[in-house]
Length: 140
Image 1 (cartoon, rainbow, N blue to C red):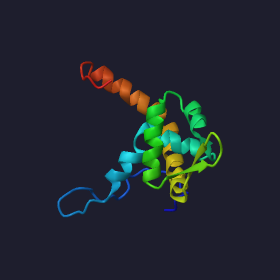
Image 2: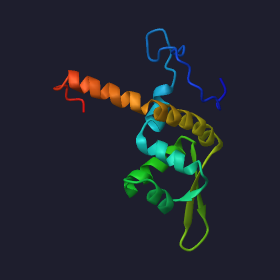
Image 3: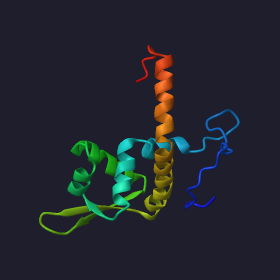
Image 4: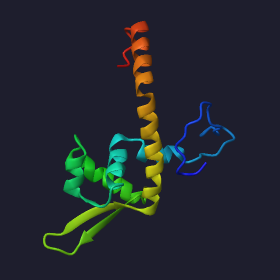
């Protein structure tokens, strides 16, 4: 399957278990720690449209605090997904852009977004059914 493949087949994919005895740590947990959080994905989506300054990112990502945005772009930079460029101006201007590795991730983010849009109503109905059958589950 290519990185541009966005069709989702009906059956489950063949996946090797991670972290099980006899199976080496596959590294997916490290990746999910970074891209599995809500802010990282939103920063990646915003940077997919090109370089942005810090304030542009902050204005574009509703609800993110300055501190959380700072931590998020630092972590993405550390992981090699985002490049931070400081321009020699007064005051200094800083912009962020996706690296080649970060840009390759956008195809997977798009596939996930497409999947979520396609299945949003089904998931909402399943939640309603579950909640009606389990009123005191404490999950909401």
